[in-house]
Image (cartoon, rainbow, N blue to C red; front, side, top):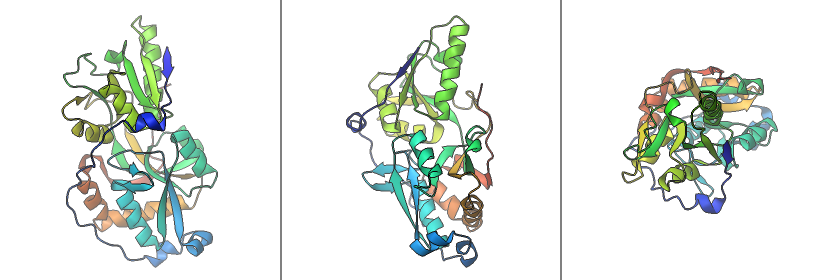
Length: 296
């Protein structure tokens, strides 16, 4: 049994999230790399800008407030824009499907994300992976329902992001619960992270199943109401890479890859990731389409 909840903007606005306390850090300003800039499509060089699309707040990577965005992804795209000699603007859409559609239609040049990279998604898009992620549960303090893994999620209401990889994994687990004769999972699918975490804080759901980095942020902002569980387990995933998204075969993929490599080599990538408490999500070298497969 699945319960599909697509929340309104009004509901999402009920979440009171304090601004993230990023560590003080000096982020080097980049100078234009003419070799990289020459690889931009001519229309982008002429217009002097690119648009990166996001699907709402995904802290500490993307923290969207009105029309403004902050976070690690904003700092990194600012540095990328400096290297390429263009302005990178941000646009927000509702949900991952709309994000992918916007990229593939050419309305937006790319999504810097990070977005989960899986072989099924690579059929229509290329991913420039720049972080490694883990998927865990955020639960009420004290974990009253004892949710520590996918198997212990049976019989509970689990919130996930609509269209995301965690939604697919929890739906597979819901079927497994029924096949094993256990109480079913009620899957609650939300369009944004704040609404998802609010469902746990307001006890509409027993857990939110999502990426560890943003959940760590939300737990830190919950005044002791929440905690993480399932840490250090695979939870239905193999190695999970996330990154920027471009249309399949786009020349922007290799260009973004080489631009990120420059930021890694000159220390900017590490400085930004450490600024936002993302040391455990850093990878040594970016790659294109590093993703694995989701459970059938």
